[in-house]
Length: 110
Image (cartoon, rainbow, N blue to C red; front, top):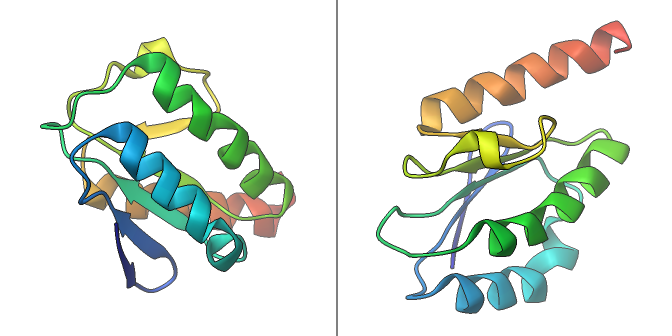
């Protein structure tokens, strides 16, 4: 797992060969990541199930409760398979746009 500071978020890129390995690495780093907006980028070459990705939904909910954003970037995922409030986008640019929109929403009190 690679962690890179971008403004205003951390980009977490999956470098593991399986989603399970990535998720375990992610959980091990979670205490260092909890105060940051996160963009998690998972290559479409890594196979994973909807059930595995749903493990990230709880982390996303915790982020929102703490006024932080969580966006998953993966171009091969059917976004209709996930809760509406779980941010999945196909590109990094769209993830950056989501973070900006959520920041505006928080400023406006939504």
